[in-house]
Amino acid sequence: MTEYESCSNCSEEVTTDSDFCPHCGALFRNAGGVFCESHPDEEASGVCIICRKLVCHDCSVESGHRMFCSDHNGIEVRQDWAGVFQSTDINEAELVKSFLLSEKFTVQVQNFNSIGFVWDGGGDSSISRSALSKPAKVFVPIPEYIAAAEAVRQWNDSAAEESGGPESSPQ
Ligand SMILES: [Zn+2]
Ligand SMILES: [Zn+2]
Ligand SMILES: [Zn+2]
Image 1: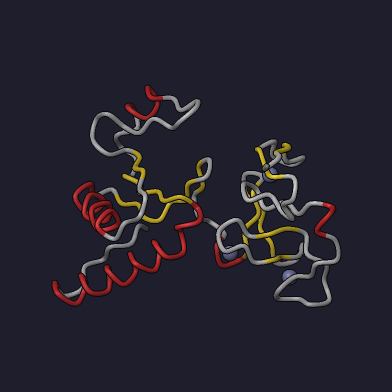
Image 2 (image 1 turned 90 degrees about the horizontal axis):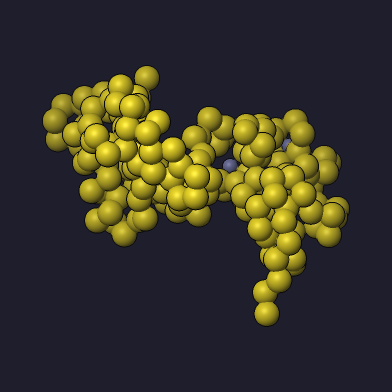
């Protein structure tokens, strides 16, 4: 039987035998004596929630009470979803979404069409609807982020080759 408790850092539910919180990257006491993967002399202070690498104070970046490694700093995270692509060009965002779906990723979008995206459990749909001037964003579940980001990168590369290299990344 799996037991749950709430993370002392972010209050999300975690299993009692976890060494870290997958929602915010906080290390739990029972982890004990784990070290930064980049600085083996430094005790780890958390786990990057994207790649699950152990990070110390020097190489972690905390954003919105979540822990990231320096490689994954700046990724937009909403609940347990990570932003893998954004563009003010809705057609391009639609293409990325269709591509990711065809590759069997789980996808959520924000600022697509007039409906907007309503987050489970507490999303504010009226705000989403009024956010039409904001870039359309494509999110995938955090555990799928690395594979999805790589897939989008390769897909962008091949698209750029075919059409002579349009700029497809957001500013
Ligand atoms: Zn947490
Ligand atoms: Zn990372
Ligand atoms: Zn470090």
